[in-house]
Amino acid sequence: MTPEMTLPFPQRVALAWHRRSLASRVTLLTTLAVGLVVALIAVTGYFTVRMQLQSTTDESLVQRARTAAASYSSPVGQPVPLWVLGAGETRVAVLAAGRVYKPDFDSRPFPEPGAPERAVADGQTTGSLRTISAGGVTYRVAAVPLTRGSALVVAQSLESQERVLAKLGILMLILGLAGVIAAGFAGWGVATGGLRPVRRLTDDVERIARTEDLTPIPVEGHDEIARLATSFNGMLIALSASRDRQRQLVADAGHELRTPLTSMRTNIDLLTQAGLSLTEAQREELLDDVRAQMEELTTLIGDLVELARDEPLPPVVETVELPEVLDHAVTRVRRRAPSLAWVVEAEPWWVVGEAPGLERAITNLLDNAAKFSPDGATVHVSLDNGVLTVDDEGPGIPEDDLPHVFDRFYRAMESRSMPGSGLGLSIVRQIAERHGGTVTASRSPYGGARLELRLPGAAAPMPRTTPVEISS
Image (cartoon, rainbow, N blue to C red; front, side, top):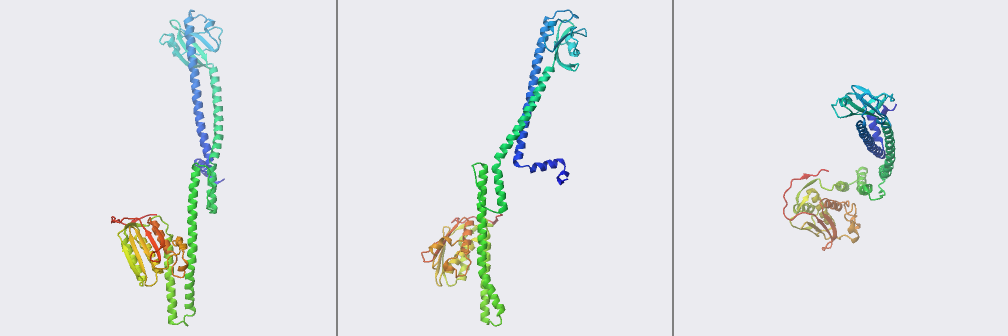
């Protein structure tokens, strides 16, 4: 016995229902709906025909009773004339003085008159109509006044009517079952054909989940299933692009981390193996080199963490005065590049965003200008109407490298011998996009490179806002 057989019957039914396919459910529901409609039509038709037959029988029976009573003139107790009997299964009798008088040749049991018929004979009512049984036969009995103290009772057997209704019931049952079976097959065909695209889409999704192959699935038609497949393809494309970016980031990060790690390991090995034979100056030089490489690794890891943030909005949003952020960034970079001159012009500009992120982006732009500027050169910085422009007097950016300077780990040929990870400008672009802005690179009129950061905001002071954390 399986564990399912030990479950109560309702739970087994529910489990079987959940295991059914969607096509089976649609077919079953269609069959049940059609079956209910057919059953309702059959029952309604049966009772309508039955009521119509009974109404017709009653009208005919009463009319014949009244016609016979009007033409009957025999004295009470005399045999009923043959013409009064009518035809078919109709029977007549006279009720007088509490006794029933019927034709001598009619030996069949006559329905026993009751209180309604006696009331008609006594003149208390003008007629009666009801159903009674006699000898295992059901009769429809009508009574009308005849003469004073008597009534004419006419009984109509309902056997023929019951036979007709029985045949009608069987016919309705057969037609109903045939309709339900036909509806079941039709529902199965419609469900199978209509749900074929759903099954195909389900198979494709299961294949993608099993193989992790993010190739878009084929789309057919223009119905809701096609729209669903198109939306799913869009999700696959986005997921594939995200996975490619992740793989590229990991590969580039591994490549960039390999160089400082190798150099650091070499220096540490030298310090370990030849530490006693090294002079103090050589030892300090190796240690300085190790510290520089550790700082480079720290910067690279920080840049990777920053690039790994892929939220459409910054985690903290507040009103930021951009000239103040620019002043902090210039002060920091000026300490790292004391040999350069800085010309800064800033107009008021307020933005809504993340102050630390904006300061990091501006600092990266200034560090890039300082790295490529020769000693004694001047870096020109201006902020006008939300556009931060940084011009240096270095060698500039070659035309072939301009489209790629904001790519991750991209480094121009002239900069590969300089320190850096190639992630600084990528971080600038990411922060700019998070704030709804853009960053571009071009040739500077001062002979070097020009980097422009555009951020939406306002020139007039904006109301101070409390920092708001944005939940992911």
